[in-house]
Length: 531
Image 1: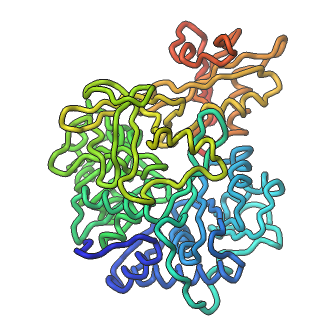
Image 2: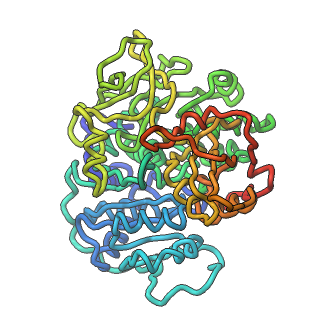
Image 3: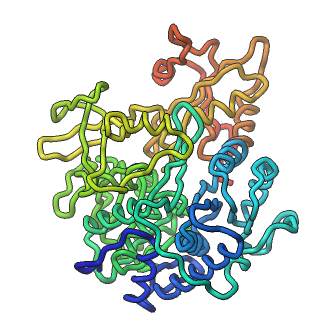
């Protein structure tokens, strides 16, 4: 557990001091490898040395296309020891979106899983990254790699150089991409202090004990797994355990094998787990707490009773910490996203940023109570940064209410971001891909309710005069050109996209449209299995 007087404001000091304190205690566990605190410090030193040999220094950016594998935290902390910046990218990206994010962050190097080489190779010539390291996997499938590509082993060898001074709390630790509602994705610049302060507050509200094991199947390229699992465990002298992908049928068995006491879940995961056939293993685990977002009220208590745990609901965003509000232990309110954490101040306001009365719907806005505890801005996008920080507050784009005791309740999204299977996606990205089909004149994408919770993606498509395309062909085009989580589930052809007087699409009219012919991609048997 975190003891009195322990304070950490950068990732390097955290890793070094915890190695001195905990030595051989288990820090990280993966399916095929584990690290003690001392090993994590030593092995990330080796990666820092390899990065130095490759010319990576303070402020340089290195992108990562990595699953939940041991190389991820070694790269993460190795970069921190070089005062460099990690840019973890969604492993589902491909095509134009992948090309855009790589070009936008302009990394000095890229580390990627061998299984993702073909996806990256399709955009490689356009982004021109100087140094590439590939992490081998299994039987090395696919075509031979170019001779200039280095193996992961190149980052693990050589004598260690004198350590650089630890980064400052306000120095960037990572750039995490978020969906833009009216334009391309934005890279949120995350300082060291934000990552650690968020993890500190999560730990305080999670009732961690000396034997705590925090387990997640959520991807390490998101702030959730980084802050809620990895850093919260390390701060509190526990163990962080990772599954490469979520498997509902074996989830509780895996949690038991890791000895998990705390897990992180999304609403879609909760609903899938709840719908699984009951098994004896539903309660043969040590899990005490499930940290979640968006739990369905109707199954909340049944889920707790069946799996023998307590659901702790929370709310967060990349820009202001993966957790910004959270229910306190012992005072959880059903359906609430909780109370603001200690480092953040929150308000509920109308469209003119005036506070609304308790019980009234308004937009949630937040601001930090301490320096460097929220993001530093969007990479290369000053106008979008200013817009997000209107009147000195960060505008979340989410509608909430607040009760008289200060508890907040999520209502709906104000901005046009679709939440699907734990991923935020922007209609802009899906529409841009669909509009490249030669038969498509224009498209509008909306979120529609999903039986698994959150939303599914529906596209309304207006064809060019005289053009024709079948639903099957357009679905296949989307599968080819979009990450799988962005591919529309539903498609409806319309004669004309409704517009305002200034020719903006009236998305809300389409969102509530009834009576049209809707085509279901899954019913057509297209792209039903995640690649």
